[in-house]
Length: 235
Length: 235
Image (cartoon, rainbow over all chains, first blue to last red; front, side, top):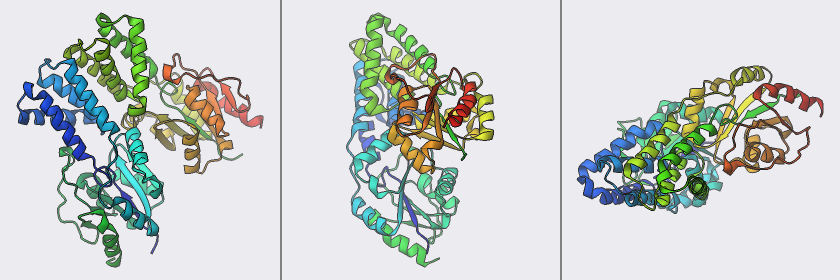
């Protein structure tokens, strides 16, 4: 068998992310409560994010700008400079937040790195993801790190070409059906889906019933080694 | 002679950038004029940008957040939500601004691409720089595009390793002494400096008196072909 490449998503696969955004969104919601009822507010925050995605891309800086924009909109211009400053500070706190690895991440990756070639493939803000990888202390476990602006089939095809990898020898591990699973199956590689406790509304997608010899669901990263072994006994 | 790789910076080397930031900064300055005198204001805007650079990295989104932060600071919280909205809109306008190529860029690159391997190496926001490259219509001229979070000697060493390039066969072309010239000379490659009409204050550096067989200054990209020919006749 040729050398396998296991590629890992980062946010919510290796370290906590969406829970931090959720806490921040809630704090901003509380701050803006005088200006709008909370259901309406949440819907409008998500709408602003969605609308700005084509201009901002993913990441904390775009999120913060969208939150400021929403605050001005929902308050009809009544939000104060101090309240906007609080939103700015919340965004900066998110950017500077220490990395909290998910359970068993380090030991699982160390075990997998002995047998396989490991990569990290994450989307989001280049500068912030590099900072987080450095903070995580996991950098040395990956032979390559790809920070991309979008994870679609074309992105994965480019990465396979760039590293001269065969889709048959490539397994992607991640928590997003939309970004880590469906496009990977589309290019003929395999995928392991590890759901995170919450999913960002703009990442929700249906997994359907994929072929279990190409795609499996795990409860945690500790199950990846066993799942990879099963994949390659069944082909 | 082996195949030469010519790598181009993008902002202010291939297309206008800093002039757009300068116009936007001036508009924001005018907006905030009621709160601070203009010299003091400019100094504080630049200070905020510099202070936030380690958290935000380069790019329009970080710039916009820094401008909002400055507006709240210099006005001591008196800036209105509508004024902050105007800053946000100015940032969005910068992000969506059409690409304006510098003179002779397309024809020069097309000529150079017939003889040499061309790359683009730019820092800044991944998502925004990819959008701009797509808008520029220049994408097909480059065999590789590297969007990096910082341009120092280590960045260039990594790129040379990644593409299996010899520093002797690599020439970087750009408008920033700090990012495109000095670190390139440090890794033993050659560099062509093409000054842009203005330089961002956080990019200013002294060129000194580099060896003319390793580093030359050109007036425009149209002179690159001749300068490259001179470089490799003198070695």
